[in-house]
Image 1 (cartoon, rainbow, N blue to C red):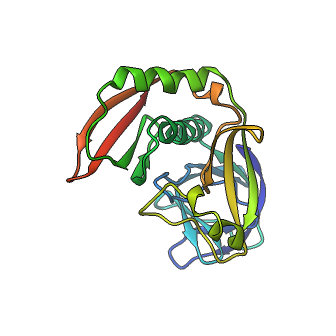
Image 2 (image 1 turned 90 degrees about the vertical axis):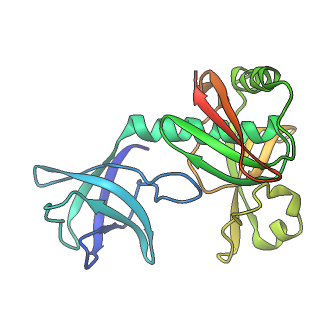
Length: 226
């Protein structure tokens, strides 16, 4: 998951590298792009960012580094600690949308914290109770899995989409769903292209931070690792 071989497909005019089997997650959906390095001919070339490209994922190399040529065999190695933190926080935000079952208007993830914006006219009265419910879901160690449905199936089930500002990627014929819990006892099920842990127990204890007013009916809820 965090290290593997690949071959360079192409190098962009700006020097970004496109691989045939990228492990790097490109920035999107509020989640930053992965960082890490490419191992090539005894060199460890730092990868500073990963971004979506027309033909895959563009890896942004450190300035001054000469990229491997098209066809070169490389080993890609992610910054594992950073990626794991993104996985934990992304899954935690799914759980936050469970304990606050309101439409989501935005979100952002970093390795240290995350936040969701909700269509929420009034702030919750008991933040401690929300935090307790959130950590109970973490401690229950629910499985986290993914599955695929067709575009048509998603259109027939609009209730699966929690985000108001970001629409699920459609057009390829199928959409990825992330499920927390079993099919018989689902905690959460929604379209998502981000990275996640395999069970909620991997998230660890969480703390709900500030709940800020960001508009007439918009509240921002921050989340950190405890």
